[in-house]
Image (tube, rainbow, N blue to C red; front, side, top):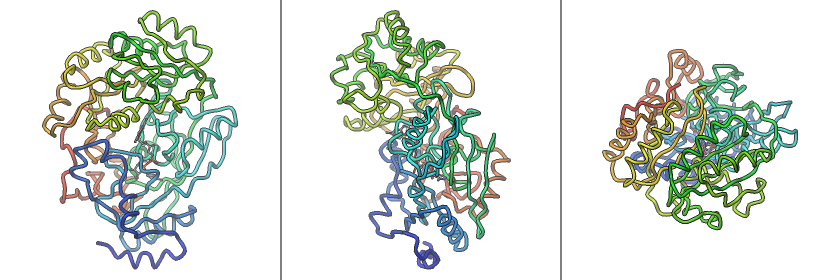
Length: 462
Ligand code: FAD
């Protein structure tokens, strides 16, 4: 493998661990839980050492040493990502960024923090100044802001503000190159999307600057519907209701709501649920829409009063987590239900996959194209071939599908790496040491294993 002893000789005074179980734990993220296909190809992959710098100056020392010794490194936040993002393919160093956790400042409608700061700490600092994060993953309380930019894409707030890559949702990034004398770059404007969702392959994020929304009094609301399509039409109508301020609209077909054990008192058996956060002043309008769509409101209180923790922790990626906890050998195909044919595509997929598994959808905006839905039937994994068939069948119903079972960035169908971004990667990582093997246009594929599902998909490219 690599001359780790020589590397560590250059890192005097900086915390590190070569303890096998610690290194293995930090060489995993949530991929193996969320993708049985990637589990086949990534099980057992591990770095050789975890280094935990405590300051940006120490990060620079570690990166310079890795460049001198030509040792690959993978920048890591909290390890809640999936898609194989934070799993090293070629050993080397896990650069644990979680000690860089300062929220640097809040100024008007902006917040700036070090990459290892937990997202909730940014939201708390913003609230103290009358603001709140616009968009956050349902892992707000555990994930880092650097990891959200490096590997996330949307979540709570996306039904109003779109997704991270939409112009205006990432204001600026302080990014470090990997060379003998690492260079610091302040990236703003359209270039932030070179680093966003690049899995740490083209620069180490040291700081992130995000926009804020005005702080809002939110109501947490649980609604139950006898008929799935009534619930779907309600979720779409709420998403499209420009007069109602909302933060999340999460639709789940039975039996998925039964997996949300802490919500049991508010879940009616065999009903479809919609979980949502709407502005307190819009309660009457919400009740009006619920009535129009035969929805029964079983819970409606100010956010934070529930005995079940934050309601948003039963939406987005957490839906899958509760399915796993319920013993489902989770598999899913990340579909995007287009705005121009939203109800139609939802109904066709729902009817077509009745026997496969319950349909769960999140409402969101993206690429300036209005309200759409993201989600999938939730089903037990059968085989790679079966997964390919499900993806093809969803595409046949007009749904654009991401390949969430590959660790290759471009092949996932979320972003393209154009020649400008490739040149940026070359400048920032001239020795291809950053998370090698994830960017097929730039670094050797890991010939030792497949890259998950190798499949051309419609994708969600901007
Ligand atoms: P990690 O998993 O540590 O890293 C993610 C990627 O970013 C890796 O490729 C890593 O190399 C890179 N990275 C990390 N830090 C840096 C840095 N400083 N510089 C450069 N690259 C870096 N995601 C969403 O978008 N929306 C959701 O709603 C959502 N819900 C989830 C729910 C559950 C239950 C789970 C398990 C995951 C969910 N996710 C969601 C995925 C994940 O939680 C988020 O993307 C999260 O923001 C990742 O942050 P992290 O600190 O855990 O990053």
